[in-house]
Image (cartoon, rainbow, N blue to C red; front, side, top):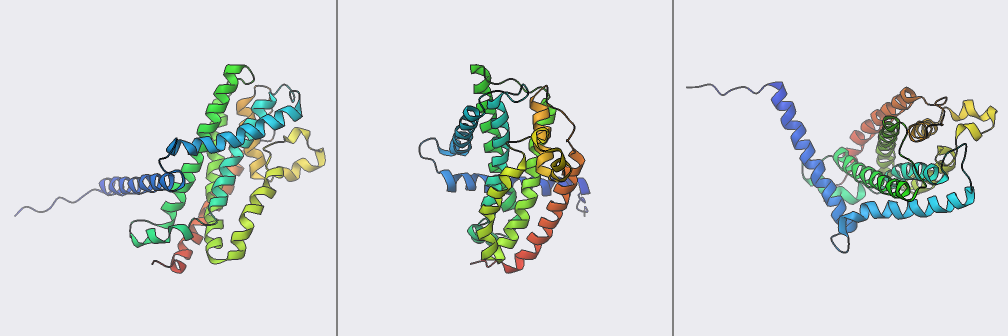
Length: 269
């Protein structure tokens, strides 16, 4: 009688990752279906919504700014800042009701709160990133924007910001599930974070005495990095990627602990 062949740890790991990827892909499609349906342009609304919002805000600020800031195109400056900030705002705000609206999915043993949060974060990030690429391409074609001077830095800043937003969303979603008061505070926190995020300002225009304090804000470093990637003349003085990586790692670790803790409070119908 032949003995069954034992599977290597690599096969087991690959099988687990494949299953996880399938679950997250299915949840992402479910998220798109629930929010946008198949009418009109269907799933493309995930790009159209942030694109319309970013274009209006960018145009308004470009008109108010009137002229370039240190050689930086106002259109590109505002577009880069707000399009990236939308990743945080949308992901963070949807974290407030993410677990409540997906309780029925917990009936399926292979779906965890982490999968739900990751699928929602991916949908928001890909939608906002696609909107940025589309509007940036339109700006280049009409002559109000240029190609990124250092694309690796720009892409790195976007990925770091999406990671940071995901970690913060894990934390806030778990607390919001247990506390209605916390849920009410989620949206105001995202609005209050906008003026100090660095989406519309740079360290160079701030008073000198505020810069050491603002440097502790990980969002500020991300936007400085994004502008260094976009503009040739942008300085790299206030870019601290390892600090942002450390903060995002700690936020993700804290969020995973809280998500694990909140599972015992989730009521499966």
